[in-house]
Length: 335
Image (tube, rainbow, N blue to C red; front, side, top):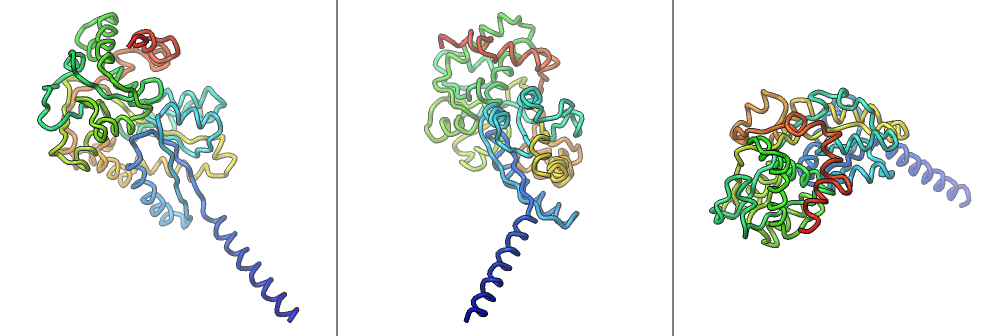
C-alpha cells in the first residue's frame, strides 16, 4: 500500500510539473491602451496570437487594459506592468520616457509612421435627423446646445476635442484670444465631463444627455452601427484634427519579463497587412494605402490639421493647454 501511495504521489507530482511547464511555455503580454480601442484589440489580439504561433511555433496570449489615455499612462509610470502601450496621444508616451525611462526616448523611430499604425479624427455624433442642425464647430458654442465630451485633463479624446475646436478658429485666421473665447463658450455648453471617451459615449447614448457627442470617428461609427442608424448619425465638421495613435514597447517591463521579442512582434503586427485590415474594419484609418483603398467607403474625405503644424510642438502645446493652471484650467474654471 505504501509503495502504491508513493507511486500515486509521484504520478500526481509529475502531472502538476507537466502542467506547470505547459503554463510557463505560454507567454503573456499586457497591452495598456486608451478608452475607445477596446473592440479593436479584442480582434487584434487573437489574430496576432494565431499569426505568431504559425510563424514561430510559440504561443502568446495578449491581455488588454483600457481607460482614459493619461490615466493609463500614469498607471504604467506608477508600476502597472504593461509590455506595450497603445495610446492616442504622443505626450502620454513621452511621460513614460520622462518618468522612469519605461519607453525609449526614440520611440517614434522604432516603428513606421512615427510609431502610429493608424489615425482618426474628431467628429460629431448627433441624434437622428440632427434636430439642432449642428454642422460645424461654431454651432457647438450656440446657447442651448448640450455638448458631451470627456475631460481633457484625463482623456486624450477630450484633449483632441479641445484642440480641434481651438484649431478650427486658428485655421480660419483667428487669434489665440479668439480661440480661447470660442472654447470657453463651447465648454460652457458641456453639462458633465466624463473621465474617458467610453464614459462620454454612455452619457450621450444611454443616459440621453446632450445634443451632440464629440468623439473619434471610429467611436461614432461603432455607435451608429451597433445602436442603430435610426437613432444617431455622424456629422463631419469642415475641419478637424489629425489624431494619430502612437505605440511603444515598455522596455523596463519587457526586459524584466523577457518578452521584448514578443512585444515588438505584436506592435509590428499592427503595421502588417492583416493588422491594418482589422484596424480598417474598426473604422480607424489605416496607414496602408492599399488597405485604405479597400475600405474607402468607410472613410469620407475630411480636412484635418496636425497639432505640430498649426499649434506648435506637442511638448509645448500640452503643458500650455493642459498642465495645472494652463489654458484649460483658466478658461473653464468658472464653467
